[in-house]
Image (tube, rainbow, N blue to C red; front, top):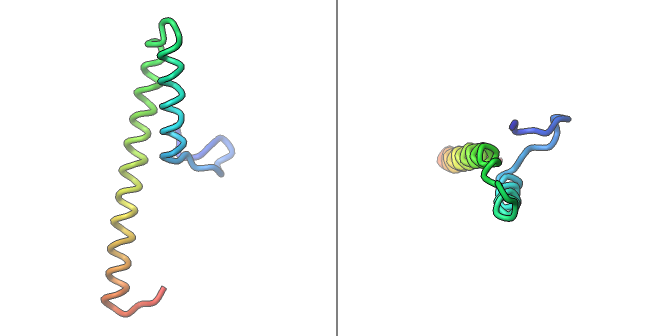
Length: 76
């Protein structure tokens, strides 16, 4: 899975990954032999962890940048 769709213009968000995991979990629960989809579920969980980590890093970047700008009287 990539961070963009086939056209390359729609990012896959944490919310989208959460929805996909929920939907897949429901389908796996309902389907006989649903465990066959475990590799897909694990991949989505992995992609979600990466996306959340990226969001956390970007938030730390924003906080540092805002602090730097405030300390040096830089306006947006």
